[in-house]
Picture 1 (spheres, rainbow, N blue to C red):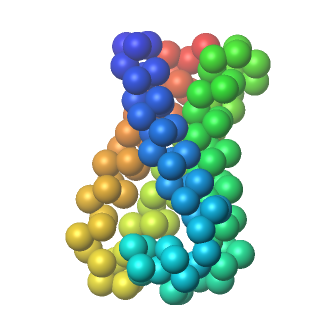
Picture 2: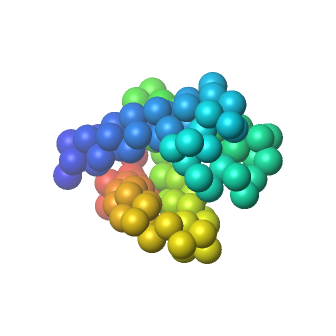
Length: 123
């Protein structure tokens, strides 16, 4: 089970690191062509979301890998799960229901890591 948790955490970290890096490094206008939801938020808020996704990705791996402050790993997974719930709400409000599937998959994976790292597979 520990190997499965590491694999899921690594996949989540890569996904959120890529998404967060894109939000941080690109302008709101460039993001709007592929992410219509950015139109509803300020450029600062989009950058903030990107930074939080990057920090969440780091939090999934670094504490668990180093053995330092390991409680941060399930907290990071919980934070990313909350982010996906909020993202799904934004997509529903905008009528972008085709985008919700990705949010749900990432939400379930993040919840899996959070529950298992808080519980039976804690450090």
